[in-house]
View 1 (cartoon, rainbow, N blue to C red):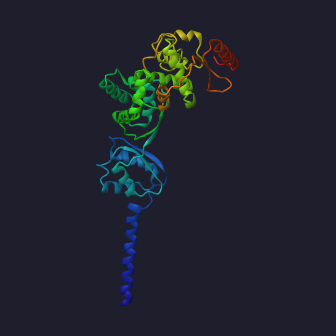
View 2 (spheres, rainbow, N blue to C red; view 1 turned 90 degrees about the horizontal axis):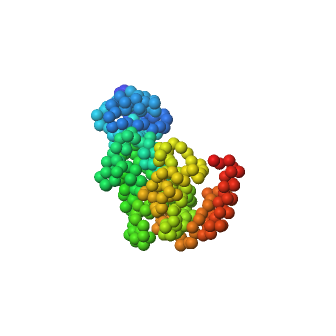
View 3 (cartoon, rainbow, N blue to C red; view 1 turned 90 degrees about the vertical axis):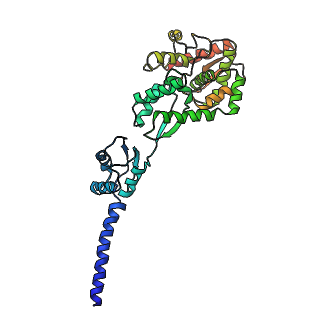
Length: 341
């Protein structure tokens, strides 16, 4: 009798263990055999979700069964999901149902053209570049501007994180909030003291950024030099503005390695060789350091600057036309020696 009871108990444990193991394998056991990222659009069907997940899992049927039981076939969140090796079906389904997607990293660089920037950004978004442009054009017009190009001042060079499903307005709002946070009362006071409008500050900061190559240690010196020229009524004569003017005409398809005399007459309101004053807008997206450099410009007497061939990326500064001529000839000779045209 006791032996029969023991056998029954043993059988119960075996059966329970069998079904328990099946339950564990189905819901909690490792069904993901390799890491990867899955993109699930807003309009995805259940089959598309299954097809997207399939390359990363061992048992499609068990995943499909759990997904249906938990309602993934009718209730899911679009997104970019990081599928990790060792994950079970239950956690995988819950991740997609809850919308726990993984953000993408975006590097906003010194884009001269907002359409260039959007083209890069939308490679990591669900929405195509045309949709992005149209929506941001609408945002610009709501603010009284012409188009997205006029929103350039709201962006700063840096690395940002966004979800694949970000909408154009959500994208812009992040930068608009950052813009307003940046303009603290202290910076607004300096803005009033410098005698420039905010648009002029951004335009001059873009010149400072391009001339400095983004190197913070020369920015305030360069800002002081250009403010000296501006306040003396001199033309700014900044080579990057000429390059920008040419790029605008060629849709940024003609790289300019060296500004030649023939380029200086390029007709454009941004060409500071052809026009006096500060350009009507920034020639590139700027970083925060370049804005601060204009607001805290060095008090110097420099009028001239020339690239220093002995210190790549840096400049020689002077208030003397004669000394500048010597510096300029040394730089031109260096360019010729390197066959840079």
